[in-house]
Image (cartoon, rainbow over all chains, first blue to last red; front, side):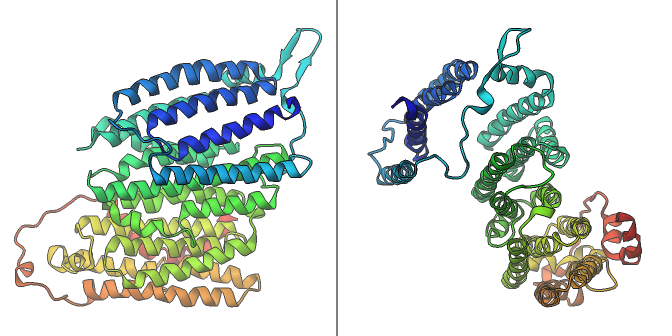
Length: 175
Length: 346
């Protein structure tokens, strides 16, 4: 099982995405989002990205999703929709599950995972030992590079998030 | 809308398009598209009625799907070439998916269904921004990947767009839908020549934006959104009836006016590349476009369209100040003698 752990985690990832995109009530969407966040963190950590996995848990699940949960709890309705309460939601969920099952069977029948791209080993997540400055991993160097060479990306992303908040406030303001 | 917020959101629309046009990294281009889409939604929803909400939702859904397809093409390109620069798309699958995604953003057939409905549901000024500024970003990406685009797919979409743009506009009386179908047809002309000579695509884009700006500003000036209310302009501002005539005929591509320049150059470039049937078909289908422009000019400028008697006796004339209308009108009708200047674009 350990050789297929990334594959199993990715299947659980996709199934929880199907779970919230079949649109039950947002509080249940947040529930499967927690599951998918945790599983996604597991996938990243299997590639050696321990820092980024920690970021997912701390910032995404522990910060953003908590705020989302609180706001949803304030705005929830009396009878929230579950996956089995509405025929449409259940139908879409089962359709998504069916597509995922078919994909899993297709991938398992062929010997290698090579559907659209070829997955070729550890690659970028390898840990380098340069000898003079100790062991450093390319993944944390990437995060450091985001703030040094990639300042423009940080500026653009920060501005997009700010404008996102403004846009959402403007759209929901109404008349 | 609060003026400060409105300015911020409008500047973000500009910034999004600028990021798309300036970046060399595929991820930044995708971020630029998303920023553009996000910021234009409240501009489309300036008035809060169900029509604008529905139009903005349709626009958001189609453009978000197109962005997802673009991201998929970017990732397939990354998997096959290992790099993020925008020089060339290295994989045919990625190229086809990217072309389809950009065609969805532009409103080419078979992804054109959102254009008339979204343009009809929003106000005239928002429709202006939608049909002119929003076309710049996808067209710039198509320009940059033009060497690697699959010719068959792009030409099929282009010719079908010209056909749909001409045919679909025939039964319309609402001005915004007419402009939407005209936009579909012009996008078809632009993408038809993209693989042969991308400079002409940019020329056509420039002249199309000038003419569409002029048309929309003339509509805003007379506050008319239907053919019927446009036909009352002889009473409100008689000068604009002549200007509407000239600009509409320029949009149809009639010779002494600037709209003829891109069509002429495109047909010349296509025949230089030994495809004769294609430009013939395109020119014939542009006649459909010309027909509904002619119908508009007939009801507006060439005849005094039947109206009730109290419409003929206006006593209160309001004048709106439309920025840059005279230069736009001059540029969208008189640029044809400047055609030899195109040699500087090489």
